[in-house]
Image 1 (tube, rainbow, N blue to C red):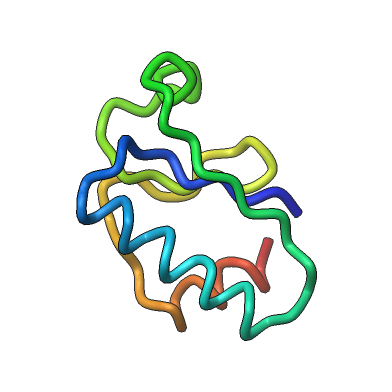
Image 2 (cartoon, rainbow, N blue to C red):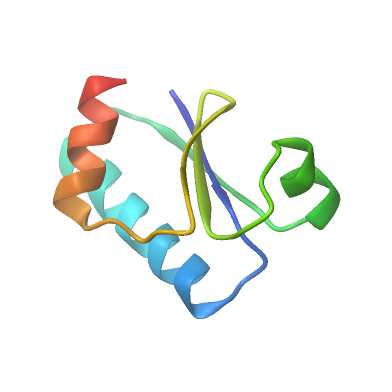
Length: 78
């Protein structure tokens, strides 16, 4: 599973990345985590507000920083 954190580096973007990495570490499923900071690439996802979370190329969340537990549930259901 490829998880992409879309954001330019704002505090919310950094927090989302931190929470995603913690959730992935807790799940231990070997997910691939990538940080996307290029504005052009972010816009190519159709995202106009950051942070955003994409899983396997599909945007799942925009403008929010979910808790680690919420992220675990999202990852388990995907």
